[in-house]
Length: 177
Image (tube, rainbow, N blue to C red; front, side, top):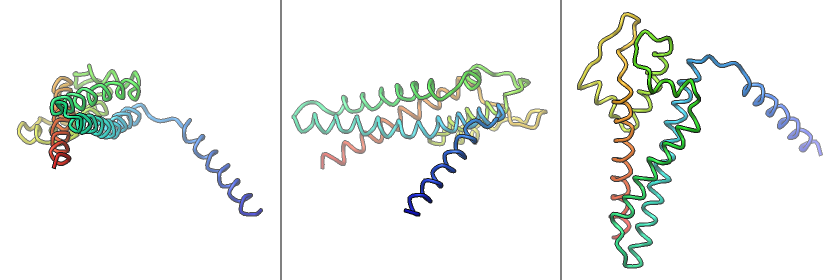
């Protein structure tokens, strides 16, 4: 009996702590960075789901004697992009969505927007490669010149397509042996 009373007390205190932190005031800058970090982690999960689905369909079709190579690759590629779009729509709030059109370095939210976007674009290291090849200038505000939203989107979509195709193809080869 004391164990259940103690466990109920622990659960009650945990619930109170969690609900109080859920409604805590978070600065806009932190919210933007956290939203992009959440989207980045979710994108890895979306890629895993898309790759698993494309590989499973490919294996199923292969065992049935049907063409399987392109179907599996197409499913994993399209599903990864669609799941990313749905995740971005659901995870990013209106403030974070503004980051996709913000290009002026004098904007107040450019620093957290640039940090969030560039972290997301570094899914497989493309942003790091880009900044190594093309170093950026440091602005008078002390931050590096942000990469444009179009370049960031290209890096994200290229990463999604590349990883989906490469890993699905690798798994197709491994499962056929």
